[in-house]
Image (cartoon, rainbow, N blue to C red; front, side, top):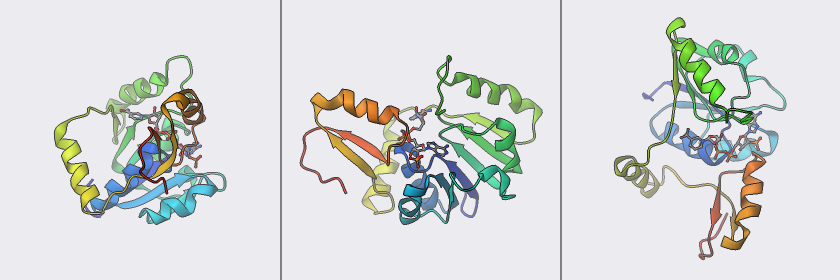
Length: 185
Ligand SMILES: NC(=O)c1ccc[n+]([C@@H]2O[C@H](COP(=O)([O-])OP(=O)(O)OC[C@H]3O[C@@H](n4cnc5c(N)ncnc54)[C@H](OP(=O)(O)O)[C@@H]3O)[C@@H](O)[C@H]2O)c1
């Protein structure tokens, strides 16, 4: 992201989205987050300039265009997603809510196959943990520009329950497994 660019984050209220909103803001982007009604205030509070409540409004029909769309849930067709991009915009698929038979890989494959035939860029993001990125994240956290949003804490013995909850696809930020003392807001 470059300062002044616009980004739409579909699935802004989850474990990935709450970091994405804050990181994009810290890079100077104008951020629009998509989430359900209960999470609108939280997404605003972590810096989103605009929030679209997907239970009330379809982001692909607002007429708004973005330089980047970060898709964490894959709830709209690829043609809907292309429609919200500027002519040289970039669509980035990170995750798919309905994994289906091929663990959601169908969407990634379609995006890559479509890429040479459209003006916009279609990208698939797969995280690679590395020291350099973690150092950047650490700096952002220490500078108070990014703060983890924690949904809840589960003891080690309750991992199955934590995974069940996570699997429902409506986590509000990150889920913590462990028995430490840090408070969950
Ligand atoms: N590619 C990679 O390297 C990578 C890395 C990590 C994760 N992932 C994938 O990325 C995806 C997101 O991960 P996560 O940890 O953020 O998941 P998560 O914590 O479960 O969050 C999912 C979010 O999606 C939102 N959501 C559900 N239905 C929606 C809809 N129709 N429109 C918009 N938002 C909707 C939920 O918000 P509401 O409760 O407000 O509905 C929830 O906050 C998952 O598929 C995960 O597997 C990929």
